[in-house]
Length: 381
Image 1 (cartoon, one colour):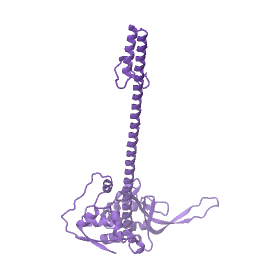
Image 2: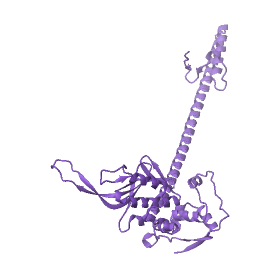
Image 3: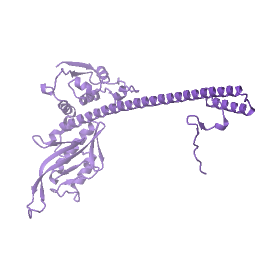
């Protein structure tokens, strides 16, 4: 596998040349891992929405590379060969990020044997889980946290373990720039612009109770198993990590890596959707403008045609008046009444002719297309 060494300035130029997802396909590193590398070397990178603005040629902000830096000077990136995949031995983005988390977070990932200096969220959760009148589930005597607290549901004997795990998880999450929020009765992990519902609970063992009769409703007893599970709801998918070959305490790096990968994936999907809908909106605007232009073109043509018809009819009217005048002269019938009528008729032709449009006070408000008075809106006082 070929590799290249990049200076800090070259890394800066690289991340402003293409989105992280595109770079992750070229180099053997996840987009999240590349982002963490930039943060470590104080290399600014495009904010959310930057590539959408580039796509549609909108104003963009390019953050300058800070000069007051004294850390790493170079990084090495492995180039993916064409057709390379996880099957050929290349670690998956999840594995790469998990290893990077283990390397950078170190002892922060170790769940202690005792709860020391707990986060304020864990202090509140401990109070809920250990107080004598705390909430207890009828199933197996579980105790659960209240709203606006990390969701934990375990048997009393596993409260200490659950609190220590959750405290370590929250501290690492916050250290990596994420946050814990609450909505209604759910606890959420905020990764990028995405919020994932999460909880820590203990698995139950369900044992059917003897039935009083064949027709009676089946009831169950619930017992503790001691198996802790960490559950996250991502979009429509529920993802679970549980005690197995490795206790859940040893799976923190894997859990956080998965959350960060999913957060970045959903962020990129959101950007892609934004680009898609922006394109669709642009198409709609273009089609609407095209439709308006067509409608105006047809309207202008109809108006032109109507004017031509009016001109033709006005010309026909004048020809008729000349013929009437000629015949009346031949008959010697040029009375004063006829002259007045002829003058009146000629003025009407001038009023109707679109090339003349002479004023006629008596015909004000008449629609020349329909030759009827325009309807006036009624007023009520």
